[in-house]
Length: 233
Image 1: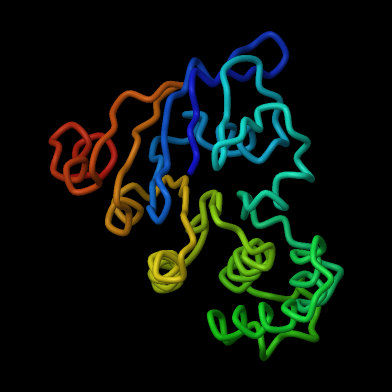
Image 2: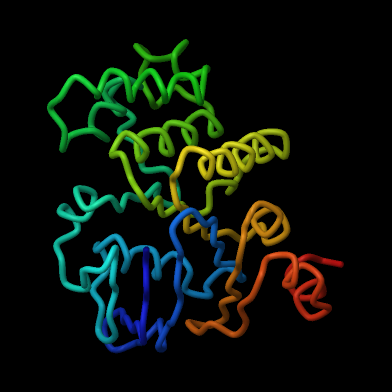
């Protein structure tokens, strides 16, 4: 579904991605793990089109989208739930969700919203309240639900567990695992390497803008180098 070849990106004169190669197959949950500053978020920003690419290619569902405008990518089936949630705090929960479906004007939008409320029941309770009044965990749920309102075939999910209590992190990861049953392919970027690898099919390990290791998730969890460097074991 998604193929990245030789991807490079820079901030000014400083190159931060140094030739990234990765692949996400349809129906998979693939995670990219690594320390803070490894370039994980920049990678997702390149895939969603908000960060310029200075080299390499991005191919999505057979079409090269390397230079495709960011606002056109959701219509192709590629949406992102960004790091830091970036919800519209001055709008209601429902208004945030409807903005996620801005590309659609059909009767299915209300059904999509109902699906979002079934996935995150707390959002139904808060639907008419200001999104800025939600807790951190609820805001993360809203950010994910907003991205899903775009009917993605592939969801880019950036640091969904950041700053959340362990019980909420567990709920978020359970939800991500459930997306696979709904036919949504997921590329997950996470500092919580153990939690991410537990729900993933495959994983990539990223350091200073490079992929240094890849493999089946269970293989990476069992690797002594990964366990020591990223899992604290």
